[in-house]
Length: 355
Ligand SMILES: NC(=O)C1=CN([C@@H]2O[C@H](COP(=O)(O)OP(=O)(O)OC[C@H]3O[C@@H](n4cnc5c(N)ncnc54)[C@H](O)[C@@H]3O)[C@@H](O)[C@H]2O)C=CC1
Ligand SMILES: CC(C)CC(=O)C(=O)O
Ligand SMILES: [Mg+2]
Image 1 (cartoon, protein in one colour):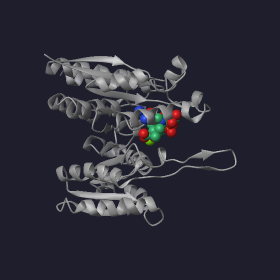
Image 2 (image 1 turned 30 degrees about the vertical axis):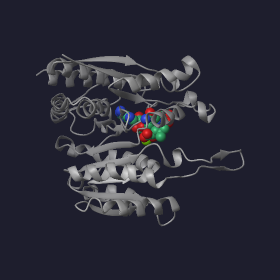
Image 3 (image 1 turned 180 degrees about the vertical axis):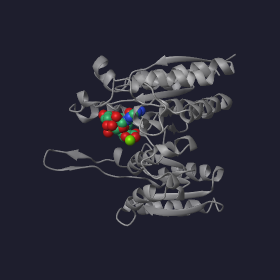
């Protein structure tokens, strides 16, 4: 029987609740498809600060690098918001991504037919929408030097090298080749030098992919177009901060931020994580939607473990559960037959897998 080592990082807030459900679902599908998953838990974020005084223990990076893949919940919370910047949970997460070299964050935003009525947008605007946001994850303004806040003046710096842009560009063009061959590069090149380099590099790279139709959009317009007519997009490629913001926007096209998974990938390893944060406002209430994390686990099976059948089984079960009207609270006002808690949602997905 095949055996895979999975590193788990639950993190803070709802991170614990959603990872527990994903593990439940993974175990069910592993049993059904005849493979074995061995989990090892690692600390990161606020919980690591509380235990060892630092948001990113070395064992976490080492352990993840040794595993086949990592499933990640979320980190952060008010308790740690006033710590010095380098000791905050978010700094641990950025360092984690940097050390693992996961430069490409793939964030699919797919509207299932079963959830066409679940968005705050009109069904005819979103039906059939299938967007892949390719977000550069270890460069840009979240990492740029110099940076400062001396109490009187504060700044950050947005930096991209040509090499970094080419690297994420290649990932996006390759993905577009496997999809509808339309790639929209989002930047702010009417204002920012870094975006001028971004755009000219994408144009240069496009010569290697003549079949892909490359377009460009300023980020402010892209935010507007995403809610005006999301179906115009196939693949979007953009920098770290723009991708962070636009993917949260895209989640409302789908219906809830609790539905969007992601894969953070590079040359060494991959981390699978929902796009949302630790949601302190609902942590511990048992109402978080675990589907984004369960979908992330399905992406992990497909892309890192090559267990495509198992991945499809999870996705079909989720679709059927939604089709039959089961919802967590975030989607309760949309065609809900029954509103379930976080763990009940995990249970019912397992039940559908075993049907
Ligand atoms: N990857 C990560 O670990 C991330 C961590 N964060 C951190 O999370 C903390 C909270 O940040 P926010 O800006 O509030 O973003 P958030 O994504 O945690 O929450 C935004 C809103 O969406 C809701 N929400 C999020 N996930 C949900 C789910 N699965 N089901 C139902 N509702 C859900 C929350 O209740 C909240 O109202 C902060 O400390 C932030 O730095 C934020 C984003 C990503
Ligand atoms: C620490 C933040 C950059 C996390 C976040 O918002 C994200 O990755 O989506
Ligand atoms: Mg974000």
